[in-house]
Image (cartoon, rainbow, N blue to C red):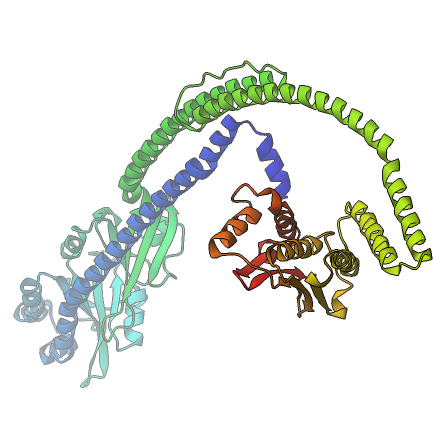
Amino acid sequence: MISKLIRITNNLRLKHKLLISYIVVVMIPVLIVGVAVTAYFRDQAMERAIAQTTNNVEKVKTRTATMLRVPTDISDYFMLDNKLEKMVNTRYPSVLELTKAYLEYKDFRNYDRTYREVSGIRFYYDNPTLINNLELVPVNEEIAGMYWYKQAMKSKDIGWFYINDNQEVPVKRLSLVRQISFEGTRKSGVLMVIMNQEELNRMLQQEPFETMITDDLGYVVAAKNPSYVGKTLEDLDYGIDLRTQQKGTFKVTIQGVPSYLVIDTLTPESSMNGLKFISVFATEPIVKDANTVSLMGLFIIILVLLIALIFVYIVSFLTTKRMLRLSRHLNRLALGDFHVVSRIDGNDEIGQLSRQFNYMVDSIRRLMDQVVEKTEQNNALELAQREIKLKMMASQINPHFLFNALESIRMNAHMKGDKEIANVVRLLGKMMRKNLEVGRESIPLKEELEMVRSYLEIQKFRYEERLSYTLSIDPEANIIRVPPLIIQPLVENAVVHGVEDKEEGVHVEVNIERDEDRVRVTVRDNGMGMTPERLREVTSFISGTKEPEQKRIGLRNVHQRLVLSYGEEHGLCIVSEYGIGTEFTFTIPLE
């Protein structure tokens, strides 16, 4: 999959690569971040609105609880009011007596005038001599069948109801309903403390969102919009059954408008039921400012991205155009036009490539001229080599003639009893054959030592007592392979300079030892040695830092072959002291 994607990318033009890279790396991430930030601002605004609404509902709930404390305290007072007990339990013989009693009992009117939270007080009691004066109301079948009356007669607790019954003078307000029992008669009545609707609504006027209070039956008892009072939650049609919903926040759609509902409940002390607080707000006004800011930010981002896209397109177009010009120059060069010149300005990478292209063309042109010149020289050299080859073929008979001649001399000396001369001639022929085989890359150390031994025997025959030698060879080292003529030049150097420079002769010692990972070769003589200055000169000669002397070519050849074959650490090491002798050492790795 990755390789396929790489192939597709490689097949795209540079301009398209830049545009795609910009869109993928810059534009898409920025748009995603912009959308995410917009959503974040919307969520934050919504969370703040929900938190504010929840806090407002909590405040309304607290103020309502304080307001409901007033009718509760009033009802507690009438629970122990003996005057009320006497008033409702008296059988009045005439309307005059009843009217006189009504005028004398002023407690209901006094509380009504004292507390602005209360708009009226009524007491419902089963006494047929009573007349309904909107304060003391006799109970008939219609009243006894009303829901709030039944609930009050079933429990000693306080009930909070929106009174929506069709009485002679309808209440149409939130009211406290409570059963009051009289111990003397063991009869009970129902006290109703009617709340002031204006006070309830005024408490909700300052709320920023639509807020309402409902009772357990779903009647709106107070609202920021007074027209909602008396309606049921079903009439408002909020899309969910608010009567069954408890405290919480709910997302709804009201008449096609996305909205939120914040619901809380309040059950006053000693009450059989409670009130529900509902606050409604649409999401659109809440997120309007956030949406406006987000849209402006998104517009600015898109505008900046488009400007950047145009800039990237222009840059990619100019870059591609310059690279196409350079490509055309390369095509002309590939077709053999070595006089093409690239004139692409600029100090960027393409401008540098253009200048390097011109330099490359100039270098190729000069190299071509050199190749032509070298070809002519090689042709002349090839002709000369052919002539030399013919001459060498003509002279190939000479080494065989020399070997045959030496063998004849050796046989003749052997037949005449001169075994020493015969042996020397045999050794000389053996060395000459070995010299003709030096073209091989490596030979066994044993063969190299045989050549060394032959050379020393021939030189001993020549110098007699002035030359002596010792060969100390580790048998395990005989099987390793070494470059040919790698020890013999060292021995030759020791013999020639030792015999020529020292009158009493020289002793040459060849020592070969095998270590764990290498073989150490030492050629030592007791000749005149070298002074420190001369030793430094020789070391410089063989290492190639100075032009070698004609007499030191063999040593330099040995050192360079060792370095090329095994590395610098295995090169030739020379230790010499004037008047004492010289020692050559090198190592050969076993691997």
